[in-house]
Length: 347
Image (cartoon, rainbow, N blue to C red):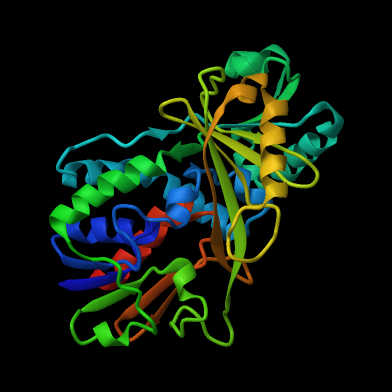
Protein backbone atom coordinates (compact mmCIF):
# COMPACT_ATOMS: atom_id res chain seq x y z
CA UNK A 1 0.00 0.00 0.00
CA UNK A 2 1.21 3.50 -0.88
CA UNK A 3 0.57 6.21 1.70
CA UNK A 4 1.26 9.96 1.59
CA UNK A 5 1.67 11.73 4.92
CA UNK A 6 1.49 15.53 5.01
CA UNK A 7 3.37 17.06 7.94
CA UNK A 8 6.45 15.74 9.77
CA UNK A 9 5.52 16.62 13.34
CA UNK A 10 4.85 14.10 16.10
CA UNK A 11 1.81 12.55 14.42
CA UNK A 12 3.28 12.48 10.93
CA UNK A 13 6.47 10.77 12.06
CA UNK A 14 4.73 8.25 14.31
CA UNK A 15 2.27 7.38 11.54
CA UNK A 16 5.08 6.96 9.02
CA UNK A 17 7.06 4.70 11.36
CA UNK A 18 4.01 2.58 12.15
CA UNK A 19 3.17 2.07 8.46
CA UNK A 20 6.78 1.35 7.49
CA UNK A 21 6.93 -1.26 10.24
CA UNK A 22 3.99 -3.00 8.53
CA UNK A 23 5.83 -2.93 5.15
CA UNK A 24 3.84 -0.13 3.53
CA UNK A 25 5.39 2.46 1.18
CA UNK A 26 5.41 5.93 2.74
CA UNK A 27 6.07 9.35 1.23
CA UNK A 28 6.35 12.13 3.81
CA UNK A 29 5.73 15.74 2.76
CA UNK A 30 7.06 18.55 4.98
CA UNK A 31 6.69 22.30 4.45
CA UNK A 32 9.91 23.13 6.31
CA UNK A 33 13.26 21.45 6.82
CA UNK A 34 12.77 17.77 7.66
CA UNK A 35 15.90 17.42 9.82
CA UNK A 36 15.44 20.80 11.55
CA UNK A 37 11.70 21.28 12.19
CA UNK A 38 10.58 24.41 14.03
CA UNK A 39 7.05 23.47 15.07
CA UNK A 40 5.49 22.35 18.34
CA UNK A 41 7.23 18.95 18.21
CA UNK A 42 10.62 20.65 18.54
CA UNK A 43 9.70 23.38 20.98
CA UNK A 44 7.58 21.40 23.44
CA UNK A 45 8.77 19.59 26.56
CA UNK A 46 7.70 16.09 25.51
CA UNK A 47 5.57 15.49 28.61
CA UNK A 48 3.38 12.39 28.82
CA UNK A 49 1.13 13.42 31.69
CA UNK A 50 -2.52 12.30 31.48
CA UNK A 51 -3.23 12.81 35.18
CA UNK A 52 -1.78 16.33 35.40
CA UNK A 53 -3.78 17.34 32.33
CA UNK A 54 -7.06 16.14 33.83
CA UNK A 55 -7.90 19.56 35.30
CA UNK A 56 -7.70 21.20 31.86
CA UNK A 57 -8.64 18.46 29.40
CA UNK A 58 -11.93 16.59 28.79
CA UNK A 59 -12.24 13.16 30.39
CA UNK A 60 -12.04 11.55 26.93
CA UNK A 61 -8.54 13.02 26.49
CA UNK A 62 -7.44 11.72 29.89
CA UNK A 63 -8.63 8.18 29.11
CA UNK A 64 -7.05 8.26 25.66
CA UNK A 65 -3.83 9.61 27.19
CA UNK A 66 -3.63 6.81 29.74
CA UNK A 67 -4.00 4.28 26.93
CA UNK A 68 -1.50 6.14 24.75
CA UNK A 69 1.08 6.29 27.55
CA UNK A 70 1.22 2.50 27.51
CA UNK A 71 1.94 2.43 23.77
CA UNK A 72 5.14 4.50 23.96
CA UNK A 73 7.61 1.72 24.92
CA UNK A 74 6.66 -0.36 21.86
CA UNK A 75 6.71 2.71 19.61
CA UNK A 76 10.24 3.52 20.74
CA UNK A 77 11.38 -0.09 20.30
CA UNK A 78 10.08 -0.01 16.72
CA UNK A 79 11.87 3.28 16.12
CA UNK A 80 15.15 1.92 17.46
CA UNK A 81 14.90 -1.07 15.11
CA UNK A 82 14.39 1.24 12.10
CA UNK A 83 17.04 3.78 13.12
CA UNK A 84 20.28 2.89 11.28
CA UNK A 85 22.24 4.03 14.35
CA UNK A 86 19.93 2.09 16.72
CA UNK A 87 20.10 4.85 19.33
CA UNK A 88 17.92 4.58 22.41
CA UNK A 89 15.63 7.61 22.84
CA UNK A 90 15.45 8.95 26.41
CA UNK A 91 12.08 7.96 27.91
CA UNK A 92 11.20 8.31 31.58
CA UNK A 93 8.22 7.04 33.53
CA UNK A 94 9.08 8.27 37.04
CA UNK A 95 6.01 10.41 37.65
CA UNK A 96 5.51 14.16 38.12
CA UNK A 97 5.84 16.35 41.22
CA UNK A 98 3.63 19.43 41.72
CA UNK A 99 4.45 22.14 44.27
CA UNK A 100 3.24 25.64 45.17
CA UNK A 101 5.04 28.51 46.81
CA UNK A 102 4.12 29.29 50.42
CA UNK A 103 1.69 32.09 49.59
CA UNK A 104 -0.20 29.89 47.11
CA UNK A 105 -0.52 26.62 49.04
CA UNK A 106 -4.28 26.83 48.61
CA UNK A 107 -3.74 26.32 44.87
CA UNK A 108 -1.94 23.03 45.51
CA UNK A 109 -4.66 21.77 47.84
CA UNK A 110 -7.32 22.82 45.33
CA UNK A 111 -5.51 20.88 42.59
CA UNK A 112 -5.33 17.77 44.79
CA UNK A 113 -9.07 17.90 45.52
CA UNK A 114 -9.94 18.47 41.85
CA UNK A 115 -7.85 15.54 40.71
CA UNK A 116 -9.36 13.23 43.30
CA UNK A 117 -12.82 14.28 42.19
CA UNK A 118 -12.08 13.95 38.47
CA UNK A 119 -10.06 10.72 38.69
CA UNK A 120 -11.71 8.49 41.33
CA UNK A 121 -10.27 5.32 39.77
CA UNK A 122 -6.71 6.71 39.99
CA UNK A 123 -6.55 7.78 43.66
CA UNK A 124 -3.63 5.42 44.30
CA UNK A 125 -1.57 7.30 41.69
CA UNK A 126 -2.22 10.73 43.24
CA UNK A 127 -0.43 11.20 46.58
CA UNK A 128 0.07 14.20 48.82
CA UNK A 129 3.62 14.24 50.20
CA UNK A 130 4.76 15.99 53.38
CA UNK A 131 8.15 17.15 54.68
CA UNK A 132 10.68 14.31 54.43
CA UNK A 133 8.57 12.50 51.84
CA UNK A 134 9.14 15.44 49.48
CA UNK A 135 12.91 15.58 49.98
CA UNK A 136 13.22 11.78 49.75
CA UNK A 137 11.57 11.81 46.35
CA UNK A 138 13.27 14.97 45.04
CA UNK A 139 16.17 16.13 47.25
CA UNK A 140 16.40 19.47 45.41
CA UNK A 141 12.86 20.28 46.57
CA UNK A 142 13.74 19.90 50.26
CA UNK A 143 12.57 23.40 51.18
CA UNK A 144 8.99 22.57 50.14
CA UNK A 145 6.90 21.06 52.93
CA UNK A 146 4.11 19.71 50.71
CA UNK A 147 3.88 18.35 47.19
CA UNK A 148 1.64 16.20 45.01
CA UNK A 149 3.19 13.11 43.44
CA UNK A 150 1.56 11.79 40.27
CA UNK A 151 2.81 8.26 39.79
CA UNK A 152 3.63 6.71 36.39
CA UNK A 153 3.57 9.95 34.42
CA UNK A 154 6.42 10.29 31.98
CA UNK A 155 8.32 12.29 29.43
CA UNK A 156 10.32 11.75 26.27
CA UNK A 157 13.33 13.65 24.95
CA UNK A 158 11.60 15.13 21.91
CA UNK A 159 14.87 16.27 20.34
CA UNK A 160 16.30 12.73 20.48
CA UNK A 161 13.08 11.33 19.03
CA UNK A 162 13.15 13.81 16.16
CA UNK A 163 16.79 13.01 15.39
CA UNK A 164 16.27 9.23 15.51
CA UNK A 165 13.07 9.37 13.45
CA UNK A 166 14.80 11.59 10.87
CA UNK A 167 17.50 8.95 10.41
CA UNK A 168 14.96 6.12 10.25
CA UNK A 169 12.63 7.84 7.83
CA UNK A 170 15.44 9.01 5.55
CA UNK A 171 16.40 5.36 5.18
CA UNK A 172 12.95 3.77 4.91
CA UNK A 173 10.65 6.43 3.40
CA UNK A 174 10.61 8.96 0.59
CA UNK A 175 10.97 12.49 2.00
CA UNK A 176 9.82 15.61 0.15
CA UNK A 177 10.66 18.71 2.19
CA UNK A 178 10.15 22.45 1.70
CA UNK A 179 6.82 21.58 0.12
CA UNK A 180 4.11 23.84 1.63
CA UNK A 181 0.93 22.22 0.33
CA UNK A 182 -2.06 24.50 0.01
CA UNK A 183 -5.55 23.01 0.00
CA UNK A 184 -7.04 19.72 1.10
CA UNK A 185 -4.57 17.23 -0.40
CA UNK A 186 -6.86 16.09 -3.21
CA UNK A 187 -4.02 16.46 -5.73
CA UNK A 188 -2.40 13.43 -4.08
CA UNK A 189 -5.50 11.22 -3.99
CA UNK A 190 -5.00 9.48 -7.32
CA UNK A 191 -1.31 8.77 -6.64
CA UNK A 192 -1.71 7.11 -3.24
CA UNK A 193 -4.02 4.60 -1.60
CA UNK A 194 -4.30 6.89 1.42
CA UNK A 195 -3.42 10.51 2.19
CA UNK A 196 -2.93 11.28 5.89
CA UNK A 197 -2.98 15.01 6.71
CA UNK A 198 -1.11 15.81 9.95
CA UNK A 199 -0.36 19.47 9.30
CA UNK A 200 -1.26 20.87 12.72
CA UNK A 201 -1.04 24.66 12.56
CA UNK A 202 -0.60 24.47 8.79
CA UNK A 203 -4.22 23.33 8.45
CA UNK A 204 -5.72 26.54 9.87
CA UNK A 205 -7.59 28.47 7.17
CA UNK A 206 -5.98 26.27 4.51
CA UNK A 207 -9.26 24.77 3.22
CA UNK A 208 -8.42 21.29 4.52
CA UNK A 209 -10.86 18.60 5.54
CA UNK A 210 -9.75 19.12 9.16
CA UNK A 211 -12.08 22.13 9.25
CA UNK A 212 -15.72 22.61 8.35
CA UNK A 213 -18.46 25.01 9.55
CA UNK A 214 -19.13 22.76 12.55
CA UNK A 215 -15.51 22.25 13.64
CA UNK A 216 -13.03 25.08 13.34
CA UNK A 217 -9.41 24.97 14.44
CA UNK A 218 -8.05 27.59 16.87
CA UNK A 219 -4.59 28.37 18.18
CA UNK A 220 -3.05 29.40 21.48
CA UNK A 221 0.52 30.47 22.07
CA UNK A 222 2.86 27.88 23.60
CA UNK A 223 6.22 28.98 24.96
CA UNK A 224 9.34 27.29 26.25
CA UNK A 225 12.74 28.38 27.50
CA UNK A 226 15.60 25.89 27.58
CA UNK A 227 18.19 26.46 30.27
CA UNK A 228 21.28 24.50 31.23
CA UNK A 229 22.83 24.14 34.68
CA UNK A 230 24.63 21.53 36.79
CA UNK A 231 23.37 23.15 40.00
CA UNK A 232 19.87 21.65 39.83
CA UNK A 233 19.28 17.90 39.86
CA UNK A 234 15.59 17.16 39.36
CA UNK A 235 14.92 13.57 38.36
CA UNK A 236 11.38 14.06 37.03
CA UNK A 237 9.14 16.89 35.75
CA UNK A 238 8.15 19.50 38.33
CA UNK A 239 5.01 21.61 38.02
CA UNK A 240 4.67 24.95 39.82
CA UNK A 241 0.99 25.46 40.65
CA UNK A 242 -0.02 29.12 40.83
CA UNK A 243 -3.30 30.97 40.66
CA UNK A 244 -2.53 32.82 37.40
CA UNK A 245 -0.84 30.05 35.45
CA UNK A 246 1.09 26.83 35.95
CA UNK A 247 4.75 26.41 35.01
CA UNK A 248 6.44 23.13 34.14
CA UNK A 249 10.15 22.38 34.53
CA UNK A 250 11.22 19.23 32.69
CA UNK A 251 14.76 17.80 33.09
CA UNK A 252 16.43 16.53 29.92
CA UNK A 253 19.77 14.86 29.23
CA UNK A 254 22.94 17.01 29.43
CA UNK A 255 21.67 19.11 32.38
CA UNK A 256 19.06 20.84 30.22
CA UNK A 257 15.68 21.93 31.60
CA UNK A 258 12.66 22.85 29.49
CA UNK A 259 10.56 25.54 31.17
CA UNK A 260 7.17 26.52 29.82
CA UNK A 261 3.46 27.13 30.14
CA UNK A 262 0.46 27.09 27.87
CA UNK A 263 -1.82 28.73 30.42
CA UNK A 264 -1.20 32.36 29.46
CA UNK A 265 -4.02 32.07 26.93
CA UNK A 266 -2.75 34.52 24.31
CA UNK A 267 -3.33 33.96 20.64
CA UNK A 268 -1.11 35.27 17.87
CA UNK A 269 1.96 34.36 15.89
CA UNK A 270 3.54 32.17 18.57
CA UNK A 271 6.35 34.65 19.31
CA UNK A 272 7.37 34.63 22.96
CA UNK A 273 6.98 37.93 24.83
CA UNK A 274 9.17 39.80 27.31
CA UNK A 275 6.53 39.56 30.03
CA UNK A 276 6.04 35.81 29.71
CA UNK A 277 9.80 35.21 29.60
CA UNK A 278 10.28 37.16 32.82
CA UNK A 279 7.42 35.30 34.49
CA UNK A 280 8.84 31.89 33.56
CA UNK A 281 12.38 32.77 34.60
CA UNK A 282 11.20 34.32 37.88
CA UNK A 283 9.22 31.15 38.67
CA UNK A 284 12.20 28.81 38.25
CA UNK A 285 14.52 31.16 40.18
CA UNK A 286 12.07 30.99 43.08
CA UNK A 287 11.82 27.22 42.66
CA UNK A 288 15.57 26.63 43.08
CA UNK A 289 18.41 29.15 43.50
CA UNK A 290 20.61 27.01 41.26
CA UNK A 291 18.70 28.36 38.27
CA UNK A 292 20.13 31.84 38.93
CA UNK A 293 23.34 31.02 37.04
CA UNK A 294 21.76 28.76 34.42
CA UNK A 295 22.63 29.45 30.79
CA UNK A 296 19.64 30.37 28.63
CA UNK A 297 20.17 28.36 25.45
CA UNK A 298 16.80 28.81 23.70
CA UNK A 299 13.70 30.98 23.95
CA UNK A 300 11.01 29.75 21.59
CA UNK A 301 7.31 30.13 20.91
CA UNK A 302 4.86 28.25 18.74
CA UNK A 303 1.16 27.72 18.17
CA UNK A 304 -0.84 24.91 19.78
CA UNK A 305 -3.88 23.90 17.74
CA UNK A 306 -7.22 22.85 19.20
CA UNK A 307 -10.92 22.50 18.44
CA UNK A 308 -13.56 24.33 20.47
CA UNK A 309 -14.42 21.19 22.46
CA UNK A 310 -10.70 20.52 23.16
CA UNK A 311 -10.99 17.03 21.66
CA UNK A 312 -8.61 15.75 18.96
CA UNK A 313 -10.33 14.57 15.81
CA UNK A 314 -9.72 12.25 12.89
CA UNK A 315 -11.90 13.23 9.94
CA UNK A 316 -12.21 11.33 6.67
CA UNK A 317 -13.12 12.36 3.12
CA UNK A 318 -12.81 9.47 0.68
CA UNK A 319 -9.17 8.30 1.02
CA UNK A 320 -7.98 11.41 2.89
CA UNK A 321 -7.67 11.27 6.68
CA UNK A 322 -7.03 14.44 8.70
CA UNK A 323 -5.77 14.22 12.29
CA UNK A 324 -5.60 17.47 14.24
CA UNK A 325 -6.54 19.35 17.40
CA UNK A 326 -4.09 17.73 19.83
CA UNK A 327 -3.23 21.09 21.43
CA UNK A 328 -0.47 20.55 24.02
CA UNK A 329 -1.07 16.80 24.17
CA UNK A 330 0.77 15.82 20.98
CA UNK A 331 3.36 13.68 22.74
CA UNK A 332 0.78 12.26 25.12
CA UNK A 333 -1.85 11.31 22.54
CA UNK A 334 0.31 10.66 19.48
CA UNK A 335 0.61 6.84 19.72
CA UNK A 336 -3.12 6.37 20.39
CA UNK A 337 -4.17 8.64 17.50
CA UNK A 338 -1.75 6.83 15.19
CA UNK A 339 -3.14 3.48 16.37
CA UNK A 340 -6.60 4.62 15.22
CA UNK A 341 -5.23 5.91 11.90
CA UNK A 342 -3.40 2.63 11.31
CA UNK A 343 -6.54 0.59 12.03
CA UNK A 344 -8.55 2.66 9.56
CA UNK A 345 -6.13 2.46 6.65
CA UNK A 346 -5.28 -1.23 7.09
CA UNK A 347 -8.72 -2.65 7.88
